Length: 165
Image (cartoon, rainbow, N blue to C red):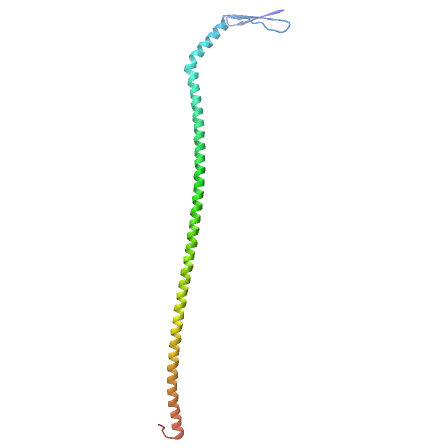
């Protein structure tokens, strides 16, 4: 068997290496001292460092989850508002189309009324023009009849050489 001595700080670890390959370790006071220091540091640092850090991590996680939940709620609300906006826009579009159709119908009715009045006025003007022309024609015929009688009487007077009464 071979013996190996290792010096670690003030303590020495002696290990015997057996043919089977096993390692044997001796525990002394340093291991107990290190375990006691570890326990002491754990007891001191737990309330001073670990608990506040764990609270900070938990608070951060809560805030992150809260922010995610708030974001989810806001997205849902935005979706609701968007659908409400789209439905309202569709309703307004329908109302505008109905109003436009109504105005077109009123405009067509008004246009028909104006055209009827214009036709009536044109017919009245044409009637008045025809009556006026007929009156003028009658007057011209009357005047022409008189003139023809006078001309005929003048022609007869010239042909006979004397005046006719």
